[in-house]
Length: 78
View 1 (cartoon, rainbow, N blue to C red):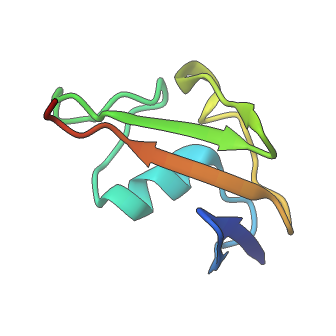
View 2 (view 1 turned 30 degrees about the horizontal axis):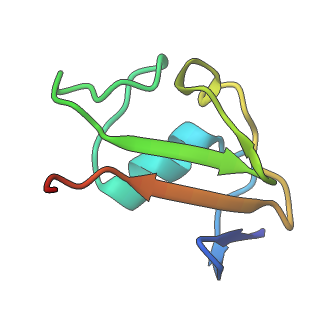
């Protein structure tokens, strides 16, 4: 199925969750609570169809055909 990720069409597998997507995009394994499995800071926020998805709900938030996802990454600097 296809979603829109940061304005671009992006294919995802059936049954994919926000956790699956973030893991695929960042290349990092995530725990069910949305934290990086390596214990390091992830620095990522996700909105689905213009609503922020709390990290604690990433695992249970299934993606659907046509969803619009904004994934933003914190950057260091001033």
